[in-house]
Amino acid sequence: MEAGPQILIVDDDAASRKLLARMLSAAGYFCHETDSATDALNRVHEDPPALILLDFKMPGIDGAEALRRLRADPNPATAQIPVIMLTGHGESEVICLNAGADDFVIKPINAEVLRARIETQLRLHSLRMQLQLQNQELEAWRRNLERDLAAARLTQQALIPQKPPTLPGWEIAACYRPVIEVGGDIYGWLPIRNDRWLFWIADATGHGASAALLTTLAKLLFHHGNAEQEGPAAIMEAVNNDLRGIFGGRSFMSAMCVALDAKNGQASVVGAGHPPLLVTRFGRGTEAIASSAPPLGLVEQSQFAETILELNPGDAFTLYTDGLFGAAKNSRPRTTPTQLAGMINPFAASAEALLELMLKAAAPDAAESPRDDVAALVVRRSN
Picture 1 (cartoon, rainbow, N blue to C red):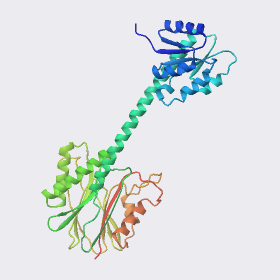
Picture 2 (cartoon, rainbow, N blue to C red; picture 1 turned 180 degrees about the vertical axis):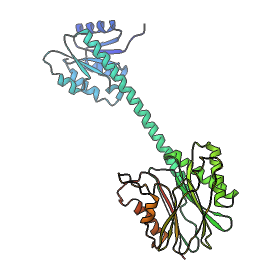
Picture 3 (cartoon, one colour; picture 1 turned 45 degrees about the horizontal axis):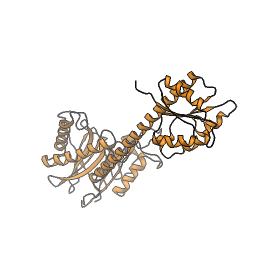
Picture 4 (tube, rainbow, N blue to C red; picture 1 turned 180 degrees about the horizontal axis):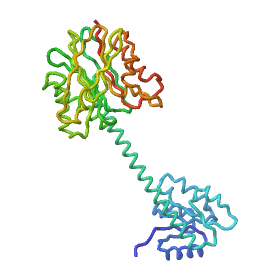
């Protein structure tokens, strides 16, 4: 028969020790005995028991002092051994508990009460050990997640363009503010055929590392689509088909792109499930151009229609993600694109000024934390 949990009995009274040992052995426990607290403290390092029965009154080091030393041990496996103190009538239970006892039993000892309390303490100790193990596993998972997020952040920072192209007669301003270290927003610009530039923005589903990885794919797909196709509608169609082919509709992203002819100010706009493009006419106001297709990767063979714009000196267009008009995390209702358009000053003197005005209009309280990633790209014709 396999021996049960090991119990160390510490009592200077030999008769009491023998009685306890017989009582617990009959209940299936494997018992060791010692008459010295000093010897007990040495034994727990060599062969840690599952539980200690410790007499309160002993010569030399008494039970309370021995327990304090045990609880101060630098080895958690030793310091956390369950201890039930054996006390006599008139002795303070408070002293036992303050010294670190898990429980106490008053002499003369009732066998059934002692067994019940031992079983309870062994069960509680097992639960504590399981909780500690789970906490250690959770901490290891958290560290791994932080490493993954750090790697994803470096990748995403490399993907977000830092310096806009130099286009004579045009100003470009951009910002990116993720809710956490990495997010699902991305934007970029590419030279396309017929001496035009493609400005694009995308918002992948979700947050964190998975969304950041999807933005990596988005940039690759836009570059691939640009190399294979001619106009913005064809590029968006290529990105949609590639994304749909990879994920089968399980992952998708909203997107908006503008193909700009920097020489004459003509622009072609295509949106896919994305917040409306905001077009600010200098001195007149801001209009919104809605998306004409569902998000990229969601529907097979979507149709993408282009909207043509003429941008005059002072005019600007803004690509942004939905975090811009839902920037506040308090009880204030989300700002809609139409409301945001009405709050923009049409006399903004630069792309940077226009971007700051939009950010301020979306979240007027600088102390508010955003509830979604915020990305925005402003392109303004200066002359």
